[in-house]
Image (tube, rainbow, N blue to C red; front, side, top):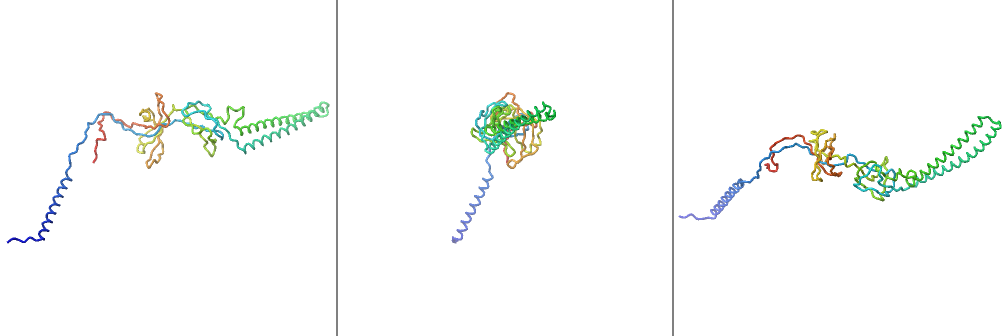
Length: 333
């Protein structure tokens, strides 16, 4: 007698088939996930070369000494006689400044002139009176009426009044010169040394002229550094200024040989010496850096511009005939 097919059996059959399918799918997934295709690796033979342990400093080329030329008096730039990159000599005229008279100073200087003129007028009157008295005393002395001492006293008084007139004339000349300096910045006899004429203090190359004709400038004083008219440096005396990581600072000593590489000159290298390692580091974006300096030797007189970016290489140790492998070929897991 045949068994009757029921829905309950059908459900069991379907569930069994689904379970079997899920089991087979899981097995296939596990097998595939554990299967790795064979990978192809690039290989290369190591080479025999010399290996150097270097400390690298990044920085730039700067002049060993740079001079900023500033005016000795406030005013407006009237003329600029040099260009950036031009060679100048010590004492060469660089620019001229036009003075803007200060009303208060002009008034004071004019008052001094008036006071000096009044002193001269009074001194002339005193001399005239004293000359008359001396003439009378001289006549009385010749007649034997007064003593020689009285005559000499009168003569001395006349001399004192004449000297006072001379001093008053000198004070007037000084006051007139001061008035002219306040108005124009110079006097005719001192035109070559006028404060309105700005001259180079040393020979070198003009690096920068930050002002233009018409720019207002002020002199250096206790409260202000003054306006820089131009900066001058000797480009034959250059140094390297850079920075190194704090981990490398303890390895270096002054006097070590450096190789200074300038990228702007097609990576040309120049010999040098490490001259300074800063005793104090500075925080640069969370990293402590130590400033360093080194002399730059330029035996072939290459034209090196101030401000060129450069790297300073200092060899700490060297290994000859070492097996070297390109680090890019190494894979890490």
